Image (tube, rainbow, N blue to C red; front, side, top):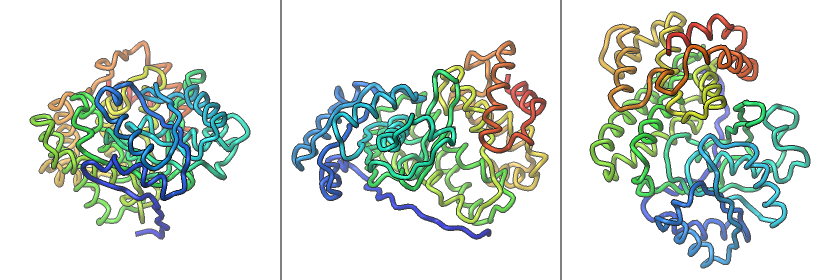
Amino acid sequence: MDNFLFYNPTKVDFGTNKEQLIGQHLAEAGIKKVLLCYGSERIKHDGLFAVVVKSLDSHQVQFVECGGIVSNPVISKVRQAIALARAENVDAILSVGGGSVLDSAKAIAAGVPYQGDVWDLFIGKAQIDTALPVFDILTLAATGSEMNSGAVVTNEDTKEKFAIGSVQLFPRVSIVNPALMQTVSRNYLVYSAADIIAHCIEGYFTASVQPRFHSRMVEAIINTVMETTEALLKDPTDYHARSEFAWASTQALNGLIYAGTSGFSYPNHMIEHALSALFNVPHGAGLSVVMPAWMKWYQQHNAAQFERFAKHIFGKSTAEEGIAALEKWFDSIGTPTRLSQLGIHQSDLPAVIENVLGNARYFGIAETYTPDVVQTILQSAL
């Protein structure tokens, strides 16, 4: 195990009806006015918005609405929200939604006190020295953004999907009520499962130092996600399965499985970010296509760990059998495993490769992911 410093200040309030406590959490933090960020009008139709407003009102917390945040969140919306937050002089950002809303909320929180264009923070032109406090009520489990300090946003003009990260962006309080996730569509349930698995395998396979304890944690998360996904496909109202799925999602990217791990990279996310930036495909759907193709190419670099994966996840003997089993499982739950299922074809590959190569430079792994390597991986995914 390598040396590490683990820090995670986020308070997670987990369970049924916990969304009713959001006003209390904000008031205890001294917050008087929030920018209330959300996606579609669904939260108004299903009653969640009313519950949140009642809680805010009961604790004298004012709010300004900022709806219409989309999946694969975009920088133009972040810029609009920053202007609104400044004009309304809000004290904090409140996200009510899934990872896209929360990632946008973090970018807004960082952008409000920054005097330049918020995209500067994504391209390394400036650092995040301060940010407004972020609070959230999670309605979809996938990204793990509720307990980490990162956020990913797409620049529609440049077709770049980049990330920011700072200790300033850890949510102060995240409310996770699995009951709020029962209306998640079948498609987004399986896309979320793929996203969580991708968070787990990046370090698991690529790290130069990967403690056995962490491998066991990763395997526990993946097995839990697979079991609960299958249970939820049969019965979306299974609260206990929903709870374990949600908590597994949080554990996959709150830093625990990477503490003591070193020398890892995020090649699957690097490749997928090009797909969603160029074609606006759901992030998890893109990952379920990329992962098996990448694994087929990368297995030679860490054969023992791929054999471990095959054994502990699927009860198989060889790396090839483990990869085939994962791809088969993705097919069985209905998440894509081929680029063609995403509407991406051979003629699109040059643009995708060019975008991936830009991401490889951004991720610092361009020496490994050359044009020929990227071509090989994407060709395998067709």
